[in-house]
Amino acid sequence: MAPLIAFSNIQRHYGEGGGLVRALAGVDLVIDRGEFIAIMGPSGSGKSTAMNIIGCLDRPTSGSFKFSGLEVTGLSRDERALLRRNYLGFVFQGFNLLNRTTAIENVELPLIYRGSPKRERRERAVRALHQVGLEGREHHTPGELSGGQQQRVAIARAIVTDPLILLADEPTGNLDTARSHEIMQLLNRLNEENGITVVMVTHEMEMAAYAHRAIRFIDGAIASDETRIAA
Amino acid sequence: MLWETVKLALTSIRRNVLRSILTLLGIVIGVAAVIAMVTIGSGASQKVQENLAKLGSNMLIARPGQSTFGPGGTTNDSRSFDERDIAALKGELTGVRGIAPSAQKSAKVVYGALNYDTTVTGSTADFFTVQDWTLADGRVFTEGEERSGTSVCVIGSTIRTELYGTDDPLGERLRIGNFGCEVIGLLESKGQSAFGSDQDSTVIIPLRTYHRRLAGNTRISSINISVAEAADIPRVQRDAEDVLRERRRVAPGEEDNFTVRDMTQIANTMASTTTILTGLLGAVAAVSLLVGGIGIMNIMLVSVTERTREIGIRLAIGALERQVLTQFLVESIVLALFGGILGILTGLGLAALAAMLMGVPFTADPRIIAAAFLVSAAIGVVFGFFPARRAARLDPIEALRRE
Image (cartoon, rainbow over all chains, first blue to last red; front, side, top):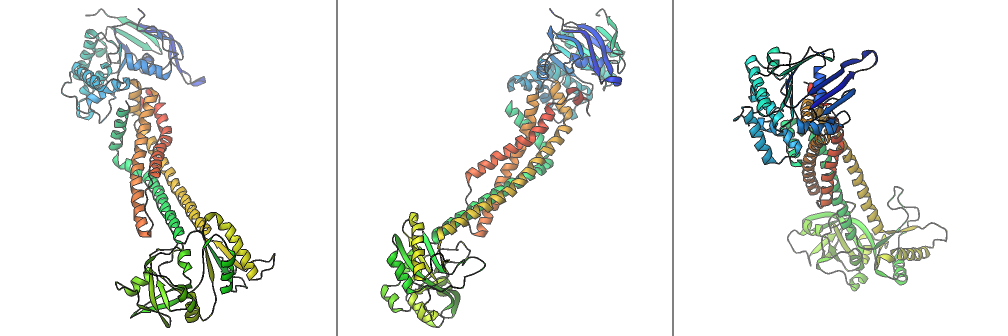
């Protein structure tokens, strides 16, 4: 089977002429199903750009990006949106929940765009919230939840569609250490029990330690790529 | 999905109640103004139409002199008509329902201790036919009374209420100037004329009585001709002009020293003037609709900017451009429709009030209401499209980065 993510000489440039920035300067990367990857590197190293491309939010300037064998580089905006909707889940540092909207409604959102019937949406959203340990908080709005709980809602929203891959951009960046470890354990469980591939950007070694593979970016290229023997 | 979108739009409108209401105001005022203008306007032209009917149908009015309606007044030779002109017209014209000579004068009429200033008309029994007067009670003049100039009169409903109150005026005396006459007939009310005067403030006496007792001369100031068939009006008008030219010795090629006017035509002109005025006022009101639409566009742009992050989230989790576009478009349509409905209600309320005060009929035209509704929706689409497209085309990465 084709790997889930296959980068082949991916370049991403911003600006032009003298102001040209090579955010990614020819990256080759393969990610298989079921992996739990930490992407690290200083700011400006290209790790966020790589995540945006994996997330089908951005398009490379050149090179080939195959998602499960499908060439993404030539897809239209809406086609990429369909990919995101059906196969990808996003978790952000700032949670990015809709304010004044209850937890369950936030989790239902991706299913609304899929056009799932109301009953099915409710059931799946309840199940996803249960999976992240938020049963009983369905009707709380983000303002009524702690940071850790908000991030759990965000994770529930990301997994409610049963995605192939979960992309987490500094998911513990806004949380204290105890909450961060809880979130990491949750991601770990989703990876091991549900078989969801997890790709996470982080700058904390402690959190990266949860991953099975650590990729370090420096100056738009992969500086190191280490796979640990799973404990 | 659509229902979800509508619910979403309602939620976001509810979150900014004050702002939404202020935004709506433009549409409300615009729609209300258009609805009120058009409704009052159509009431007014309906009233003109009714007055046109009251004026007497298919009526030609001959007057001595030229341009009686114009600012110049009458020309030099405004010699009035006389009995022989009438006889000649009666002899020559065909297809005519009645020919009524008349002369008018304002006078004080007195009954008991009460008096009232009114217009006294001297004419013949034909006058009632020609002017489409109906009798509420009593009778009109007999030929004998006309010939002998008997002191009898027929009075309008205003005179009746002003002077006689609840008494039955039939058989009572009415003093006109310095002669007395007997009330023999009561007219049905006609209301205001198209020119705004009270048509019911009138006293009608036989022409000969008028000449002898009131005027002291034998002038006839106008001849009212009622044509049987509307299609014959131009022909009868031409014939009447020929007869009068001959009678008044107007040489061929010389200008008439009288006019024969088609009253229906005048009334129609007035009705169409009312329509044009209504249209103009409606157009002015429509400008405020445009302003209202721009208000909606403005607030939708603000809304898109404020919710950039939300839009980013939606796009990131897989909303299609079309879905985001629809969301914002529905929001602006819902906003505009709210405004439209409020505007329709306000407009109808204003029109009903104005109709009451102006004494014109109030008729709510469902077609205009439907049109106002559709126009509001269209404003929502037109002015919401640009902001909605801006939202749909946002770059999700940029949008998510925005605080």
